[in-house]
Image 1 (cartoon, rainbow, N blue to C red):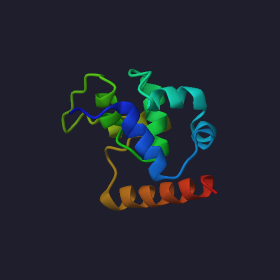
Image 2: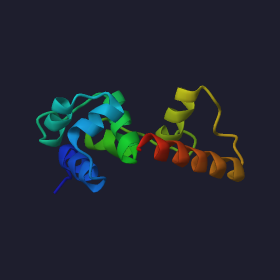
Image 3: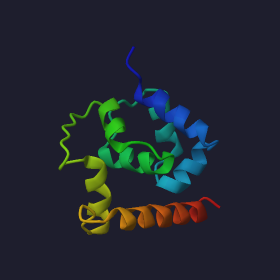
Length: 117
């Protein structure tokens, strides 16, 4: 049986012990809309909503896009998960060394831990 987007999102939220209002605060998505998503009343949210939820729950954006029914084509050079943050930050992350990438991930984790407090 195919996994449903709403069920996956709800389980992800509960894994972090987050209330709908907390997710609303972190993402800017109304708690009513998130509730409708989780109850499978909305099955095809916009990519921007999926991106915000993927970021909040630390999920694969590509996987959420697939669950929502968006056609995803991936190649090693065209990985959506790598393009989205680079686009947001207007930077080129494809040329990072492994050490630079590790440092950025470490710093991002630090920033996210501060945001959650």
